[in-house]
Image (spheres, helix red, strand yellow):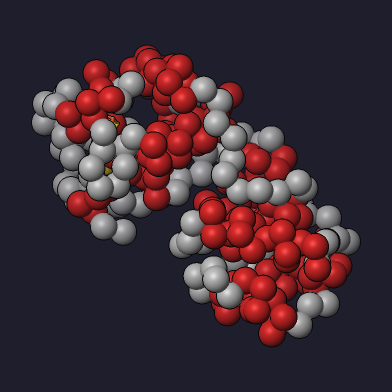
Length: 240
Ligand code: SF4
């Protein structure tokens, strides 16, 4: 992860610094409330970028989305889901056929193996139904903490704050954390954002990262949280 673009300096200006970074004490629940409200007012209620209609499609799409764009995933999943409409069908798929369908997605060979292994595990352990428990999801092939949080939130409506590259960058710039570690940033976000806002907050931070707080060249002059953001000089001493 390129620290320069995340706004992560590697040295926490304040707070509990360790190798993983730190949450910043300058980010309080009240300040965070103003930030989330400003993002909501500007961006509305954004939906997920991945296209899916059920937990099966969500889980497969999430696994495919690692280190590639949602747009690329959405370009291959209609054919994939038409050919393999559920876990049972996917569990019986030939790897060569999966690879040919998802070839345009990064790491397609690994992902073809992962989605079939995931389908087989769901069939064998959970009778073809995607589990909704964190530990069970984390045990599935190709599903790490971020993917688990996305599935919990988007598939089951269970509060979780997934930290992807956009959330990581935006959180560091605004001043929630000084860390390039997604788990650390997740803990900083969930410490000051109420649980009821975790799902919408995750979507808002992604939308904001894509539309305004871009990796290269953030549009600070048009930003609705400009007045609350460390990156532009608020809270001197905490600027990433
Ligand atoms: S002010 Fe700039 S750095 Fe801060 S959130 Fe807005 S776009 Fe990102």
